[in-house]
Length: 505
Image 1 (spheres, rainbow, N blue to C red):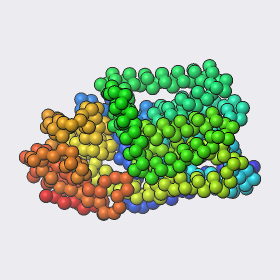
Image 2 (cartoon, one colour):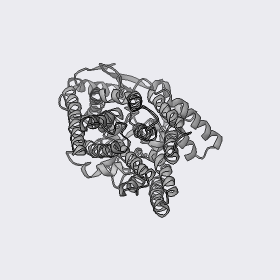
Image 3 (tube, rainbow, N blue to C red):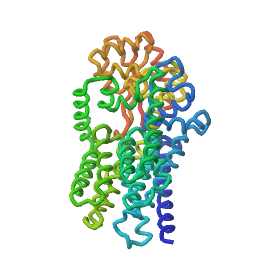
Image 4 (cartoon, rainbow, N blue to C red):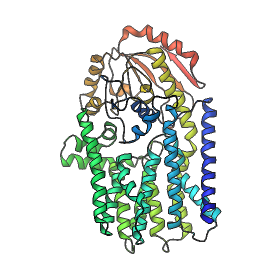
């Protein structure tokens, strides 16, 4: 009866929070649903081209492996060409969120620092923890992150079973296998978890699951190489300097340098400091810890993310490992640290999750005003190939090519974007491809500047910068089309959303 009551509180409270965020988004956008990141639309653009074209562009156009998840685009594929395509990522994220809540309820019974608490208190603790790990914000990213978190929590639950001498349930093995297919970072947890399972006597099953897991990722890597991409997706290599150095065959010293700089650069984000606090707390538990195997697994996962992973950007990258580390501390510190202190620690390190949840509606509002407006212009007015840094919404349902100047969706660009001659090579590449229009923020001028390029217009969003830009500019690489661009921008003006202004030069 207690468990059922706690579940009711958790799911009713979650439904209410979800409904409030969704209502706020629809209110701000005038009834138009939008996600909080442009990256979601990269998945939508990719999914509508599957299964025969693994690119956000049509066959023959600029191509790259823009998905950081092996299986997620395929989960969107059934609805990708239907009127419900926009809501496919939301539906999959909701499935992941339900799994997260079920697993949190399971873990609450194993790690709860207040075992005599009432069902109301227990339900509110689980619900509050879901907010602190940014579960509701992750839903509205429309990406694979709720599924990733669910797999990480399922692995942790199985590890706790092993600690207590119980046989892990079947979904522990499924989560270990599926985690890296959902997102590559899951290898940082799945591999140590399998090693721990081997130490607990589950040798054959662990080896079997490990072989299947690694085999699936390797087969996908061969698929990418067969398409002319790297061994890992362009999006992964673009965002991870250490992995890029390994992929491109650089020296061990260069890779170590990249690891060091990635570690230091992560501390630009407040979430990395919270992550470091959790690692220090875990280390402090080591001397008297009876479950050192579990502690080592969690520390390895945390250190792996610190060295190879990223932080920031709507709190989506690190949420899974933050949840695992906090819950592991709750379990390992029972009887050594006061329950109130543990809860205070969770609130401290989860404060950023609360922040990201709070700004979710305004983030979606900015994406709607910024990216939906640009998509409208490119698809319905310009109707020609373009280049840009944020290419997701621009590529979705767009029959024309979109060249990604960042390298997420262009393997060719990714391989040259950080080279010394990129400022010469990339403009020449755009000229060869007859790309006459670039849509980008002012940072374009710092990277690729040509005297003959014309700044023909710019769009300004009123309000605070959150997770998208506010000032996209229209640069013509072909000055002969100035009048054409001006007339098409003027035609767009009457259809701008509220709070958006357009300057035409």
